[in-house]
Image 1 (cartoon, one colour):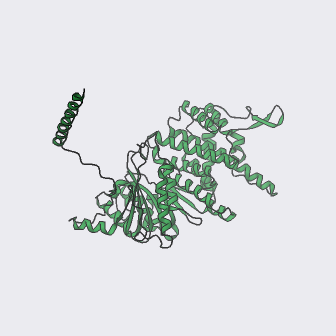
Image 2 (tube, rainbow, N blue to C red):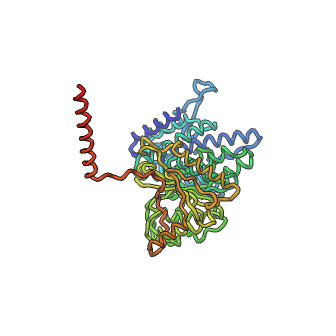
Image 3 (tube, one colour):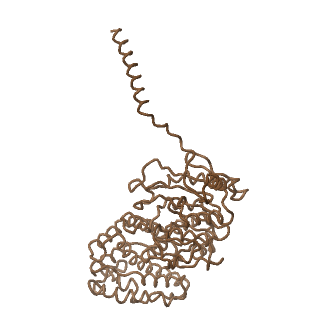
Amino acid sequence: MFEQTFKNIDSVLHKDAGADSELDYIGQTSWVMFLRYLDELEKDKADEAELQGLEYQYILDEPYRWSTWAMPKRLKNGSVSEVELDHHKAMTGPDLIEFVDHKLFPHLAAFKHSADHAQTIEYKIGEIFSELKNKIQTGYSLRDILELADELPFRSTKDKHELSHLYETKIKNMGNAGRNGGQYYTPRPLIRAMIAVIDPQMGEKVYDGAAGSCGFLCEAYEYMAERMEKTTANLKTIQEKTFYGKEKKNLAYVIGIMNMILHGIEAPNIIHTNTLGENIRDIQEKDRYHVILANPPFGGGEHKEVQQNFPIKTGETAFLFLQHFIKSLKAGGRAAIVIKNTFLSNTDNASVSLRKHLLDTCNLHTVLDMPSGTFLGAGVKTVVLFFQKGEATKKTWYYQLNPGRNMGKTNPLNDKDMAEFVELQASRASASENKGWCPELVEGPETEQSWNVSVSELRRSELVEGVEDDTCDLSVKNPNTPEEAPLRSPQDILAEMETLDKETAIILAKVKSLL
């Protein structure tokens, strides 16, 4: 039912002139679903208040509630057990578009200014409808979409879980569709592996400053919710004081908010802002986090005014984000950051300076090397940096993921691919329980796909070989890969062929003599 409803909504949007891509489809679906969700949320809260003998104060005024403008109902055949759409009251055609564009959206956008503070659902309503526009051009298309959305149940936990799964699928498809959609989607098996290694705990604050569709925060919520003790205090903490994010782009912000709501977080702590517009010198202890999980956008090219917010000036957006993340970690805080693999070896001043800064201020204990094709349509090789702020890096464990197949749209990354990496990290963490996370005491396992690198030896070897300055080259160079047999020269091949021919001739002669 759920999947078919989503397909039917996409089909209606495809026929409408106002929406012409997966990006438009998910944006328009999101605002409709949000209002449908809000209607169910208000019904639940009204029921709870009635049970307590209280009167519920609705967020939306009566004309702007789903049951008034979107789906006014009447009794079907006079039966109190059945209702149907009241076609005499329901707007259809130009009057529906007129109401949505000129009354509904402006009314909802005004909540941004009237809400008590930013971490309320009222403020989120205001931000969403300040940033999005209705692109559905015909009221008949919108009427069809409203009726389809009204069929979706939002009330049970099972329903919300299935809806969140389908929404994630739409986000993934949006990334596969190309254009700029891919920036919103990080493969969930990779995210889950990163979270398993970082292992966020109750009471810790988890942050993503390049939140996109909030995949890291949603998966971290699932991870922590499954493992925590189900107390009222814990439920309040995980809902309100655990997950934080920032996102610059309008559509990504709305998608992220909707994604977190469907995963069970009622008023997500996601701020719509350019993270890089903040001067990192102004970040104070109260602004720092215990855990950071992120896949910052590659490339980009921020203006020089933005670059002035960072000690290491660079036009590479991901490098600016990495500086922000290091500064935003609490002492002892843990991070897992996806970044282009060229970060490990680039020799420009910014790359070298940033690598030195990372190694000097954090323990870069693990580098996970991902295969080509991990990010569909991105065309870049990536690594994941796992580090803990505080002690300088002494030894780094590399793991080179080899799924044994070419990655791509028909062979995407899966949880089984990540299993060995997660297991090896777990054994390493277990061995370090009585020693602290000390790389010289707890090396990573040495296998054909993994090895350890001493950073001090690395720096010394560079200087000995005559390098004018220590570049801190952290390139992925697997010393444990089985050596392939060297290619033979043409002369050797011809000589062997002659020998084989002679041996064959002798054997044939013997066979003939026996006949």
